[in-house]
Image (cartoon, rainbow, N blue to C red; front, side):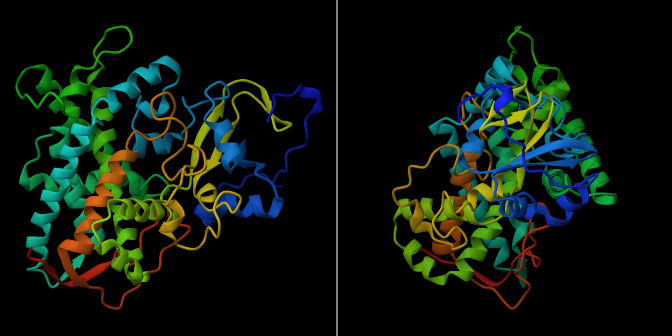
Length: 425
């Protein structure tokens, strides 16, 4: 792992051909992992979007990838992803002190009190949804959970949401994470959705600053509207709105994991018995295994900050580099029997910040690890408790398979529930 001199470098395995963007789109979550297997290497070189790119996976690769001396995030994401998923000038694209300072803004709302408030709101929204679901012939879980989470996210972030707007805002926030890998109409609908939500959020930020609305001080809308950068300036309206959306959008995206939670309970019914006991530790282990086992985001991108050598491979400044998230979470060097669903693997798990990376790796405060990871786990635990202890339901015959190509991956039927009943306590 030592830095070497440029003269003692090895030739990096590389994929022959002019461009492999179509292969990446065709193979989705398996693209990097397939080549890591065929090259018998944690690292290989390819060509994506007409340029040289490096793909890497595994614990050591993740540790190198999150070294801020080696890689930078600015300008790493393709424009189509910026236009849909992240928004311009968001925290994901910052580096150095500017990134650290902006990240502190996000972590400030992740206090124990803030997370407890989020859990309480999530619980309340689930209860309201269950009352409604009991009257429905069938519940399309993915769509309904997105709405639960949109209501939860807006309330927690201090964002006023009119009842008439819930469906549209849910649809727009979801379009941002459902469209980055899409081409054609679906991609454009994602761009249109982002523009629409940014305009709405920008108006709210301006209203906060003008004193027309006053969200609670501990909420994202309040904190981000009044946040000052390293120079002491307020963020411009567009950037402030992008960052509030960076709270809302990822919470709605937890619907993907919640759908897989329902799928895991269906496919592994013995787990339900273990979860019936009031053991918060097992619920945590189950949620973590759902996050490890099922596909979420396939990889993350960065650019080489300056020439360096790692493991005797030469990295040149400006080279696009992708870290394999899905493959690292299924790496047999890290996980015993990685393709078996087994929450028990987390019993005494003290793995590194670079081996379990469903939403990215590294350190929360100093690095680029997703600040929303705690939020994800807490929202999933509340949702899991409802599936196991607060409701009864049936899952009729349907297509519960999911694609390893479509990003994000969602069971084809979106998990349809029938005969939903709230368990009276």
